Image (cartoon, rainbow, N blue to C red; front, side, top):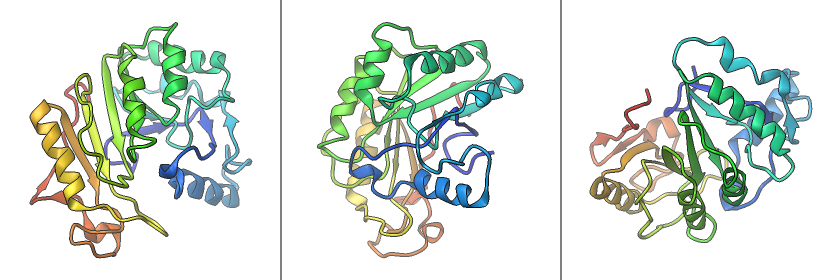
Length: 243
């Protein structure tokens, strides 16, 4: 089982990445990759340098139980350096396992848009973009909406500023969370409430993942102590085809 609240398992046919926007500043995957490298874990010999893992492609084929997979929790499938033929192989596995659901999240929304401009999105693949701020994050929503996908989602984590109004028409799910770990940047309660209210009004499923290192009261503490409660409620909505 994954420790990520909104999925069941992770599948990493690619590891390693490069920073492209402020949301990447305190990347958990980079920290984890270096830790795994130090431990001598297989697949992390290169640390956080981009590495294709063709030997992992068949992993979902070995699981019969319907499962929600977060694809490349330790990377980004749409990096410039990843050959489209390898992405094709990932999609082939997704199509071959219709019992599973796959969450594919990227910060390279332009590359994802280009890739699917000549290919159909598998029905069991959910496409998402990261939206951490106005400058870098919000334009990714427009790219996502150009893709004909059955399910589209936004991962607004870490939320670094008030996003104002966001485009939710055509979006099915929104995840929001604050930053944790060393150097975490604070997230204000009113930013989260604004997004929650917009989702409720638009009929979009809303999932509040965590406060992170800064609580709703603006105080810095352990993320477990800050918890996941927003205005007295745990918001853990997921589109009906999922968990």
